[in-house]
Length: 216
Image (cartoon, rainbow, N blue to C red; front, side):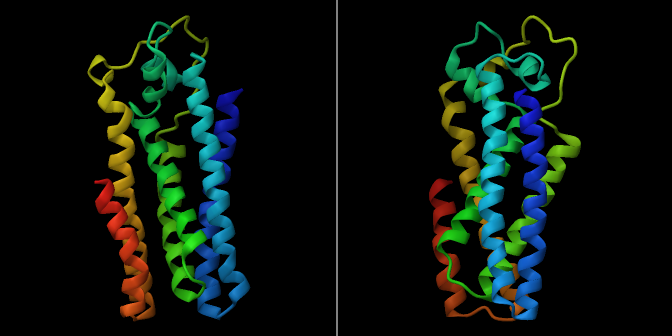
């Protein structure tokens, strides 16, 4: 059941990301403040939906749901519980979902804190398109919710080299740094579209660049 829920909310997250990537641009071009504000709503919706998908995959690992291929290939009933949880991102599919979650969190943070206007709308639009690309890649080529039938009695275990305390903190902090620069990228593209890289632009982008460097 968790796999079905995860698949559904991940697909809805892709729709939210596409919405965020298209409508704020249209609003900024038309000077429509109401349409520009929809980017903020879509950013919050995207975060909630990706977080729900990530929670579903985490629950599948925690409960050793061996009907999910990702759990079969990266978990085992005898594995310590902490590595059942970190095993969520100890593989390609799960780590991509973690990447998408952090990307959505950064987008929602921009939506919650950035000043209103065309620049912010375009930033959220760029971030939405980047998120849509990653979510589409996950859904169509690296689905973490792929099923196995019949479900095996146990899993294949996580790579022993990854059963280390470093796996608990390294990928999340690394992604907080790397993914954080997607916001600097979004500001750069938005500034180029507006043809304005000025002091206000620098003030807006500086905290995000510093945050990403800090995590790295």
